[in-house]
Amino acid sequence: MTTVLSSAIDAKRDDLIALTQDLIRIPTLNPPGRDYRLICEYLDKRLADHGFQTELIRAHGTPGDSDKYPRWNMVARREGTHPGDCVHFNSHTDVVEVGAGWTFDPFGAEVSDGKIYGRGTCDMKGGLAASIIAAEAFIETHPDFAGAIEISGTADEETGGYGGVAYLAEQGYFDPKRVQHVIIPEPLNKDRICLGHRGGWWAEIETKGEIAHGAMPFLGDCAVRHMGAVLQEFEDKLFPAMAARYTEMPVVPEGARQSTMNINSIHGGEAEPEPGFTGLQAHCVPDSCRIVIDRRFLVEESLDQVRGEVTDLLEGLRKTRANFDYEITERNSVLPSMTDKGAPIVTTVARAIEDVMGKEPQYVASPGSYDQKHIDRIGTLKNCIAYGPGILDLAHKPDEYIGIDDMIDSAKVMGAALQTLLLPTSD
Ligand SMILES: [Zn+2]
Image (cartoon, rainbow, N blue to C red):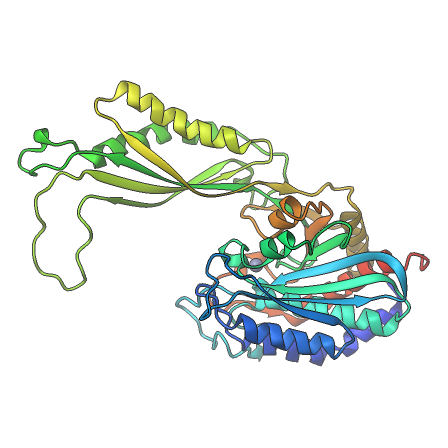
């Protein structure tokens, strides 16, 4: 990268810290989806002051959108002086609940020992701030660039992204005719390129029984015992089958290179009493038992196969187990996304990491999904990665922080990528 750009980013260190602190101090908790309007107005003003055309877009009617908690998004675009590609930096503005165990004020954004502490520092307001600083420094030092730079701040990534990137993709914001390269500055560590993520399938399974007096269970049919049989089938057949599959995707941590399934919850029979209730339970045979499953799958598996594997086991029980009856309700599904290692955004950022940090990048994929799925599937834009500062393991934890030097380094990588993509004659 040019020394003039590198020095310009170093010179913005205080600005980067102040920007990150301002973003952290807007408590955009999701759920319920607080203060999206406030953070979008902040970003809008910041980027309009730096010559961007800005837009605030509400995702009307998407899950969670209401007049009390409207789903606002901000998209800013700065045109270069002649035609070329558009590079888009997309960050989600929402943060997850605070949780227990903090020693710092979660929305205080205190600086200590070269780090900024607070909910969302790592995931992912630090990445958002780094991308803004990178773009502003690049524009200042190379005002005659080609193409365009876009920066978006979007809602609801932590709850599926339907009021954020999915909505913008439906409106054409990620049409490959409009945008050619996307970097999502999620906290994947500053020397790693995240190519994509596994898929997910969420479903509720209910087993059915028949209510009767608990002293005469033979007159009813226990839905909890039927569910026990379902779980036994999973233990005997499904879990071993999933553990035997191994993906070519470079998923980290290693355990997530297999197919996995979590059983989120189980409910059967009488409802839990209110806290403080001192009465005794009634004696009934449960007529319903429900579990919610969270099945994560690999790029080598299809959604139909994933669904079919579970329903085949349930249908098998219908044949072998007396009075077995069930219902399955799909809650949500997400397909895996995997960008080709030879895609332009991958090779460009790889070269930028080598240039700035003097080492080869590591290529990874995420065990859980992020907004790349919408850019890929709805936007049909395949040239997308996650790359940003921050330690992935700190996301959603107490005393979450972002290292200031890490933000500077990854801003330089983003700046170097802009040089490659938007200054085609520079090398
Ligand atoms: Zn995130």
